Length: 547
Image 1 (tube, rainbow, N blue to C red):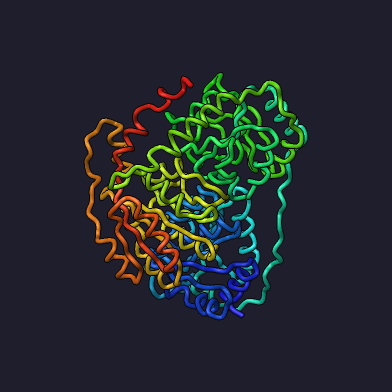
Image 2: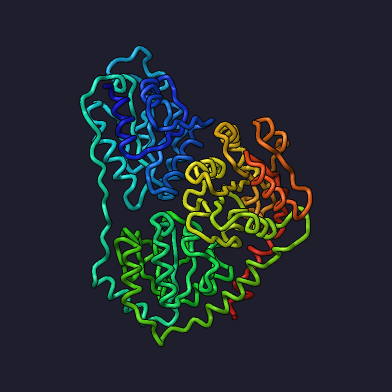
């Protein structure tokens, strides 16, 4: 048996189902070993997209997604998706090839130090220098990647090491069960919550990845405490719940922030500083309890007064069991804020008939067309804020967005990964025209895999979010407009179906038609972003915080 055979056996032993990527000549031994494996190779059109797909598999399953590239430029194309997984908490193994390390006849051709390049954007980066080390390296990579906080790891397999003979076997896969917090930490948290007048629960990113939603829901139902989420915590509790105040999509000046400012205690569950802060702490302001698998990273805007460290689900159950609803609590203001949000966020212009459609109408139409267990995969752009703010998620991990690295280009590849994980669920990619074109070639991958997938391309012929920021700084719009291909013909050239929305109400019709017909459907949707300034730059807080 050779090293590449052993590596594939180790991956099979870990339960790997897919490897995404683009092999090169340095991967040929590994490719041959993979040919005889039950693991399915998903050939992509760009290594960055392969990384996004693998990260999404990790995000949705909690297992390690795996992707493959050759050396040099193939490996450097992994850097963005590795950073995406690192900040977003997604377990991924990046495998890269390399020239022979014992003898080479090509000098330094295509050779850069990939192990060092990957170190800052992974939790572990190693070169395999002896094939007999593969079992313990793979086991350590998977343990590291799946720990809390999960993230990316990297192994480099040189060409000559891949072909050498070995006599090892895979390690036994073991599971680590995280402990709960100490009773002392629980009791102090209970005391702080019961002494508060307006405690507020924050549901953040790790609540989606470690599936602590049922424990959080039980806590909310038993205490009556209101909650809101970060963008990456969206859906951990059904947002139709009567105590839900929505998602912190803006930095401030929104209805939700009125409640945040009025709270005297925030129970912050599963948030870390990689995700954009949903609130800022001020000296003498509200107190914060940090509940997470790992201690808080403190800075000038986050310095919690108490920490409850350990398994989030276990700790929330212990808190729910120990808390008795307090006579001190007064949630009347939070309920008034919720009523304002229902009217001025979720219902605002949801039936607007103007065309091109405003973002509120597009979000409302998607909510009508996508079933409760359907998955939205959002790229990054102005529309991400609108969907985070206005789209109500019904189930965990049904709104996939990135508010950590916040990279463009991930929406379509992530949707492909989501569809492979959940082939029986409806999956819709939501992309701006800018982000879509960064990895639009993966339409061919989706067609080749015979997926049923809907891709929404929101067209405004420019980088809309930066225009919004530019306008907010009182700068004239400059340097942000571009041209686009005919998206309908572009989709058809890959073998997908293409449709252009030309009237209000057509979007829901086309999505339902795509569901019925099957296959890959691209729907081009012109969007009117004039609402950006009206809603986000006029100081909503000044209008609403006097509730």
